Length: 84
Image (cartoon, rainbow, N blue to C red):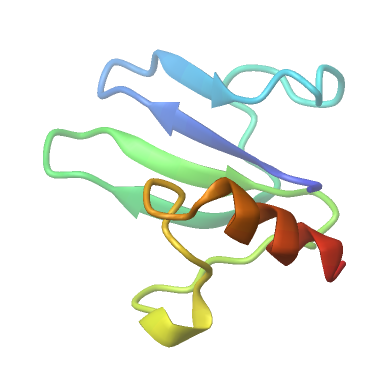
């Protein structure tokens, strides 16, 4: 994964979604925002991705998504990751 999700509260306080990317972005630096979703309360969710490898799909076909993590068995999970 190259980007990260950042959630900003209405007051500008950020929750940074991931600590693997420690360099290259200061709080409030949104230069590499690829997707932004503003909420009614003034908060914002952003996908920040300087390498442009991430993507967002709104309302994707559910049959294209993988199984729900809450419903998959250990054997099904093992079988799924063996294929990669």
